[in-house]
Image 1 (cartoon, rainbow, N blue to C red):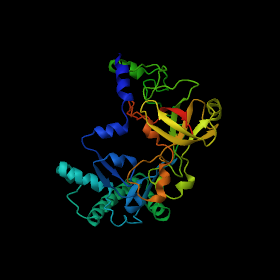
Image 2 (cartoon, rainbow, N blue to C red; image 1 turned 120 degrees about the horizontal axis):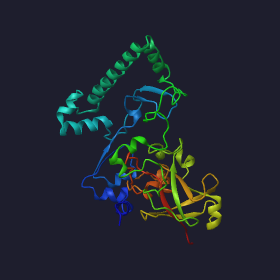
Image 3 (tube, one colour; image 1 turned 90 degrees about the vertical axis):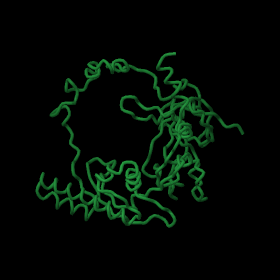
Image 4 (tube, rainbow, N blue to C red; image 1 turned 90 degrees about the horizontal axis):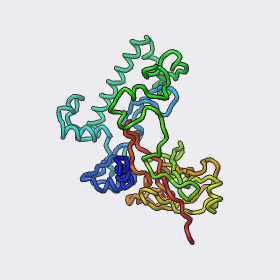
Length: 345
């Protein structure tokens, strides 16, 4: 058996569930009872962004913007939720106290103490950022402050097109888009594992499904309404969330599956089985099925509230992922392969 085949055998026998069970110690830090909480030895409840002061970039936006927000609510009574940074700094203080002191942290016993420390720390960083902006462009500091005060955010950089490769070359040896990687070719170490010219090879992240069968590539995705670990646990998600598995109309006809019919989804690699309704549509290509991530399929034992039982409907696409990490960049594959079985009545 080749080295690649050996790696593949180890890969297909692994998933995040089995890996979590084998850990000597598993500590989870989260704001809600996600499924991984069931596998943890210790759960460290963290605060939600509305419960703390925060300065950060505006995510998933075209232009580069920042925001500065103040806490609007407090953690529920009886929940000893702590700021993520407070948790990490307390761990750091115990393990490497000299490193915690580098950022001026000694010890905070209450949320009020930590908020006073962290708010001042955040404000110092924000003030330094404003001073740097004003040095680059006089008057910019006042504009950012006005934006933050009136809108809550301020755009710092705007997306510019037509730069690469017209005015500025790519960071390749030729300065152009390279189909053949000269940089990779120049490194003998990389050549042992990678080819400088792109060639097709089956994905090592999952077993390739058989063509024109009941096996499919399972692709996951997200929407803005219901697909996150936070708004999954909200009442509107009961109605806005889609906890079905999408299948192409031609595949459904070939397998005799009707729209909204309940089917069994079995992982080719993880062997996990679950059931969900099928949405028959042309929005997915033949040979693949689609399911929203962070929308359903929650099996946590800690879900006490009866009104949120709907989050158990559907599947969690992570059940079927093998945990394969791309060797060069470390990206973890979310796609997987599954077998769709009709449920016998």
